[in-house]
Image 1 (cartoon, one colour):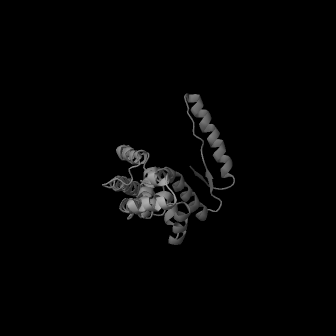
Image 2 (image 1 turned 135 degrees about the vertical axis):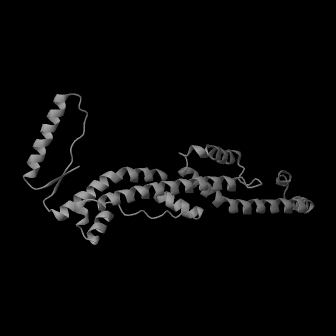
Length: 231
């Protein structure tokens, strides 16, 4: 119809429009419906794509990722039934489970580090305020539970704390634990020095003896300025 109308003008165009009035109305109504449906589904599509970006490393979601890609390639966002909603729910559910698991593992490690600190003689000599300050400064306070109730909350949590960052947090705990002990010692012994011994591969008896001799000299030299804590 549109092609036909495009070839006419003036009175002839008016007559043609009148003749096809019902078809034109139906076409217009369909266009409005498509536009409305697109506006309704676009936010859901955008959320699904953002969630998928955070889930690329999850092998269990390979099929869901492929389905989402197919929707984009086939331009089937407006198909019935809605193809995106179930995919988005699947991705969100998997991400929530991963976040919860990572949070629980990290919280357990933090608690274990805290228990080790409280068993240290120098730590128990500090006041509660001093302990809290050191824990906060070294990222050893119990982590806050991630807020992932809605998809928008889930995305905000992932944007601020990606899944990969949980492993980084846990990997950093041993160093933070040693730093906390060093700070505790500093408060109790202002002249306390932290000495980090270098690591390496020793293959012979002579290499072991040489390494021990070097570290002995290093520690004895440090002792001249005050007590040392070795890490």
